[in-house]
Image 1: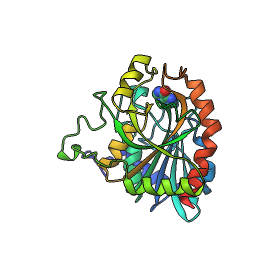
Image 2: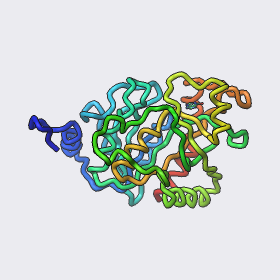
Image 3: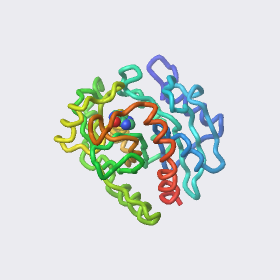
Image 4: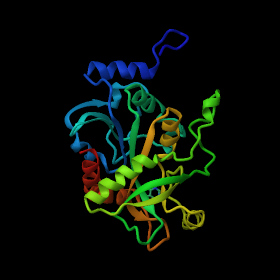
Length: 272
Ligand code: HPA
């Protein structure tokens, strides 16, 4: 992975640094932890922790409610590469901000990726504190992490982008723990301002049941790299204007942190 100038690419450097810290593939799963969900990394046994600052191409800037480190290890018999904290499009307008970490995960042999996020719910019967599995998404923003890519691989198919088999396995894990896991359609908004009530009403009319500011660019990048993807939302609030919903970042963080235990239990059941 050398550029024409002979310099190592950021991803190659990140991989070399990971190796220096004792983190090497193959891993079975990648797991990206969203806002307030960082404590899910406690599931990892014999963790090796590497700050993103040591990993060229990994996100630098921090959003409150996010850590910025890799936690690599095992959950039961499964080798996992956990990203505790992610970057968002809204940080600097780069939709491909998660490209290097995605490439690094693919290079580490990861074929299955589980993304998590905090999201708003548009369904009254999926209240704050619920978990939801993303079955599909809507992105009408005009933003895409593959804009500017010059080869035909950019025409990434998006049917079953959220892998039916992984979704089935997560549903089975939910059933084993007696949990209800509704499936939803996630409407990506670039943020960072929250949606207006009118946007939420429009979103609902379009068939969305969840809204959020993350995940979608990562799914597109992961599909480009051939990774199979599942995505779980922790519902932290109702969408703006719905059922009293008036989302704020502090609410997102606090509800995700409180309700994160449910997601932890689900992932523990899934991996074990
Ligand atoms: N909108 C967008 N992103 C979010 C929300 C929301 O209501 N809740 C948590 N993340």
